[in-house]
Length: 113
Image 1 (cartoon, rainbow, N blue to C red):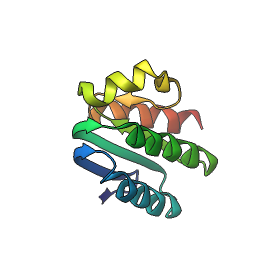
Image 2: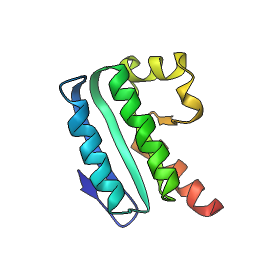
Image 3: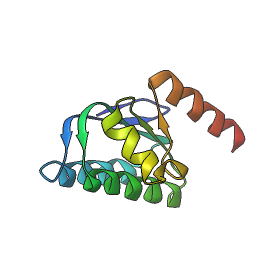
Image 4: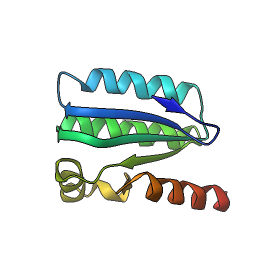
């Protein structure tokens, strides 16, 4: 986990499955409770993402929006991007290919507020 004045970032690596989703949800809840201006989940090192992992991300984006926190996900690998698109979650869970893309999007959202 890293934090700057602009955003808190939760980095996830390996498999996002039943054995790790509870830790992810807990970490995201802690970060959201701190009310950063933006929260980023960096999944660029995730090799597998279960439905439970996607559910945690959807919960995080929902909770972030309710608190007025901008939320972004970084992922470029198929393990995350494909199920997100197939389940039409990309409509509520924007995924960015890299940190630069996420930062640009966050900057745009901040200017629109």
